[in-house]
Amino acid sequence: MRVIIAKDYDGISRTAASIIAKEIRAKPRAVLGLATGSTPLGTYKELIRMHKEESLDFSGVRTFNLDEYFGLPPEHPQSYHTFMSENFFDYVNVKAENVSIPDGTVTDVESFCAGYEESIRKAGGIDLQLLGIGRDGHIGFNEPGSSLGSRTRLKTLAEETVRDNARFFGGEEKVPRLALTMGIGTILEARKLVMLASGAEKAGAVKNAIEGPLSSQVTASALQLHPQVAVVIDEKAARLLDRREYYLYVEKMAEQVEHDTGI
Ligand code: GLP
Image (cartoon, rainbow, N blue to C red):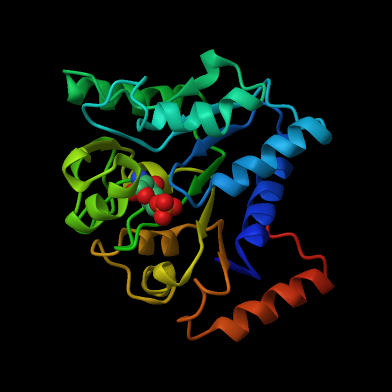
């Protein structure tokens, strides 16, 4: 696991965007797993800048989003469909037919989720999955207690997550209680994982995910099982890490030997 500690939010955004850009330049038909939330916003901004100024080309890129609120139609202002259009897709040249986001309006949830997994497989699997982390240590909407082998399914949001997301909906009572989300098993099948975290309020989750025991109570700890993970965090989010100095030292050494870990 690479732990990259950047100075601040801009630093994590630039680092994450350059990892993603490197993937696309090496593989123009890359399959990207995308995430929502406030944390990846800077990464999307930087990718948009690279598209405009450095001709980063998304025309062959295929994308799968991690999750969507259940019950929200795509055009709902707080749906993850809207989020992705407003913050990324409207500004780059990803083809509409190459975008997949779970549909929160489906009635046959089971067959929809099986179909979502099937489309990922048919696309050749996800090359690089971008992730944020919730304060309770969730990735996607895999709340504490989610099986580490889980697949795409309907999940009940934890109270803490509902509270955290209330700011987007203008009140807790308006936040959907259910979501469709890729499972931990689905996420672990991506070839590379990049997890972002910023700010002191994520420090506990980051510590538990990276240095805590592997546990379904902190679903991000499942990243410890994956051979190609970059955890990209700012100094505030890294505040509680016991081995912080070591991670910084490893990155310095990697720079010196221009060691390529594949991420
Ligand atoms: C939601 C999303 C997650 C995201 C988390 C943290 O629960 N489903 O993918 O990582 O929020 O969001 P933020 O980045 O806004 O803190």
